[in-house]
Length: 209
Image (cartoon, rainbow, N blue to C red):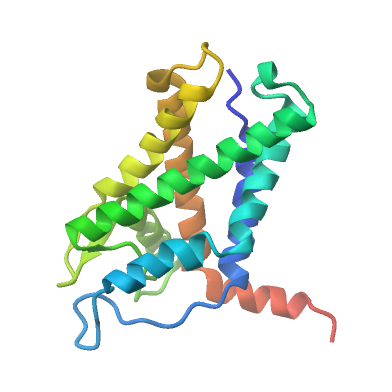
């Protein structure tokens, strides 16, 4: 069954654009003397200001829903405005559940949910860091741990949203498949984060002077 690959691609493009366009303040790596763990307020701001307060969150949800609208997935919702509204709401809910579970889980476990670029050179080593940071997270001492909240967010969000899909959608089948897609999607976003300095320089060169 087609789970809407087109809307995943659209979502990736929008999120990748946001990763390049949104300014990010430099921060020390866990384990460095200058590192300060995220406070409760900072973690709250990440969700309510950086996520819910970002226009890219809503653009991504609308863009992703457009792909589902074009592909009429699920077909029971039709290609109507009502169907599009349900797709936008569902996509936004999935993004929000995933982000909320990840952020809250990392806070409870004392893990830092931010992405830390590799202090290394070479495309392969940096790509490996992007892959690792999809599944691992740092604690305040600079040790890496399996980021279980990341998995909970990806698979939990997919399983939860299928409960209001048509009956032929099973949380343990299609919901898990959506989780697979979310984890693969996160790898792509982390690659964008890892190579964002080079990408920014590349796009600046393309601008007319």
